[in-house]
Length: 430
Length: 33
Image 1: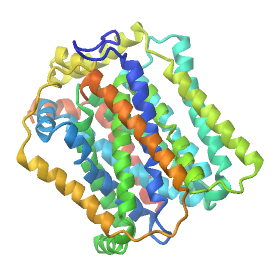
Image 2: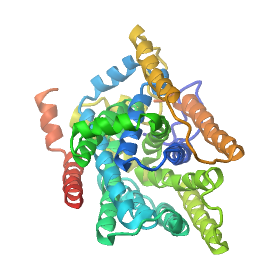
Image 3: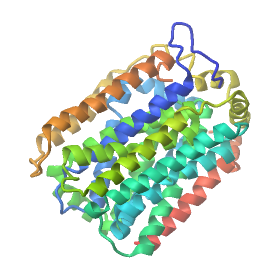
């Protein structure tokens, strides 16, 4: 659990704080990019079906790249060592599913401009739970508090400004009270979802294992909620069939979401939820970049609107910079260790081993886990579903800027390469 | 899973905070629907 730990012999000496910050920012890029494919879906489909498609895509995507990184044998070993955490990973997936459905209600009733900043307060909720339950920021001085809290508020404030600037383009004003309640509810649920995240990582669980169980909880709950909202399983299946020609796009969004969420998990592991979540919440900037540059959503925006976008982005970036510079001091790290000791004592975990994993030095990370032949089949089946969906996709009548698409795709792949390499060199993805 | 682990899970405040929030969130969703 020590920040002074500089990695196992032969590994990178990058500090865990810097690694966590990079992961938080990479998460923002990929979570923001996850919105782009869904913009290619023509109108006429229920938002529940689009959400369901994205979650199905995330579920399938989990068995592609992450399986390549760590085999299924490693996953089973990790779950066998900490079986109690399966409960929390499922719970986190369920919280996400309910929160995501609430955001649909929020956007329908008050529009994105009001709804987005309200549910973006999830980082403040997460920060509170991190402080209360996991001793994050305890022992941190005034300077540390101001950087983290100030940064988190700045990111929420920046989100509010950006949302106002883009309001006239995406809103459908309606029943205000319902929408505001739904957005605030989503914020509380999403913020609370980070309790399981942090618990898993101070217990030494691997993010790849956590995400796997998370997707089961997520898919099961979204399936149930969508079936209830559409009037039964029969209607859900019929809607999915109707949506078949466009289903590849939400699936692709789900793929980006899994990569983004994995980086978010690593950020929560190495810098805590108080710092990691506000950083990944800057994803709105990337969503905005896709909307404005690729889909031309800001064409004809007034000069004052453009100024608002620049202001909101500037505030958000300043908040992210403040958090990036808020390294936890020794006294705060002692408190992090108390939180870890609680888990080890309560669930009979090996403190020494957990401390090593938490510090990114999992003693088993470098070991080659035996790969089974059917793992290849699982990966091929997952990739095959994506290919099958892509082949049956109908061309969408929507104009995009190819030039900016290449730029943003490159801008999305670079953090993947850089951050993936840093994670491998420093922690072997532990 | 051992019985003692189950007891530890069921008496863990880290479980009940998210569970209560999940129940309240689901209730809110059903009310708004």
